[in-house]
Image (cartoon, rainbow, N blue to C red; front, side, top):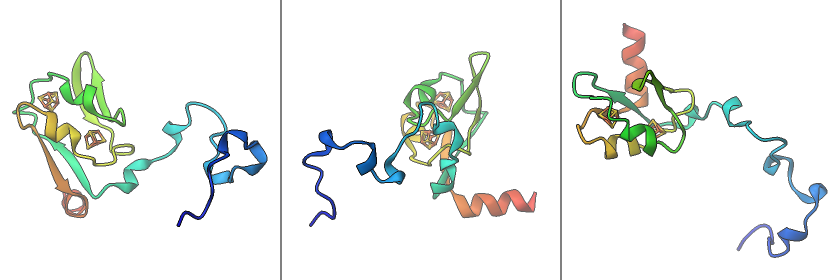
Length: 109
Ligand code: SF4
Ligand code: SF4
């Protein structure tokens, strides 16, 4: 059973929306580091990647960063680890790696 009844949501004014459901202005997504939700992170193999940019178009979080028409890096502050980039890559150049193991490896470097 649903906690709230949304049947008349189109009639709701600002006072009835919970603060957590309020988007106060546009363009705020950049302020939230959704990368903290991730369980697996994409790691690109630069040897395999030919900068075709398919992953750039497929990423739902705009986390594939481009510079001069080439894949520059993956924005791990906003990448949620969905794995779509790894799925669509025609060269199998992106591997999804367990986040905790990847962090450990980074610390050891
Ligand atoms: S889809 Fe694969 S080959 Fe193409 S840019 Fe992304 S990582 Fe590189
Ligand atoms: S794992 Fe998902 S969110 Fe992260 S870069 Fe790949 S497609 Fe984008």
